[in-house]
Length: 207
Image 1 (cartoon, rainbow, N blue to C red):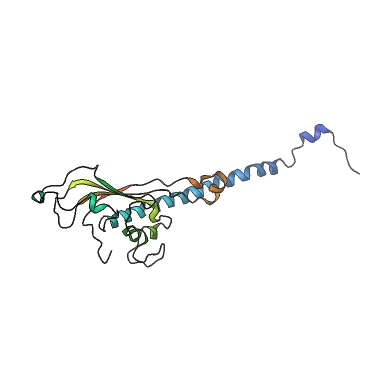
Image 2: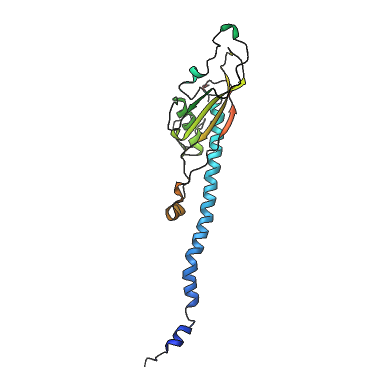
């Protein structure tokens, strides 16, 4: 026999309240947990990017110039041969830039990014490149800028001494869950410019 219940007792019934609260709160708890996990993953990608750029900057500072117009912007000898031996101008507005999207970049940029084996992310490369530390950074994502530093002198046998800045562009964080749910997969990794003073801009056989 089915027992009838009054509407008042139905609304006052507490059975199943805990289950209902659990069904409401569980997705929120899982979302918060996923946010913590993916925040740690994002920080790992951030750190990888910084370390990769530091390695790339050190390589570029002792490698052949990465810009196509380098020789025109930074000639080794002065216009007047009598000025050879004098200090070069301290004028940072004299600059040459490679990138973004490979604009004005030389083929040497590929070696800096890919390493000596020309492959990203493969263990055992004796001279790794940028993408061996962070495979998501490709040549088109880099911007390299050379500027006059006021160091060196006209006629220096090993070329000009410049300030070089390396930075990354258009690389986004890889966030599988939050990216799909909240659209955060389009958040760009900061540029992280790394600035060094160049040495002898010539690629050695062991680099």
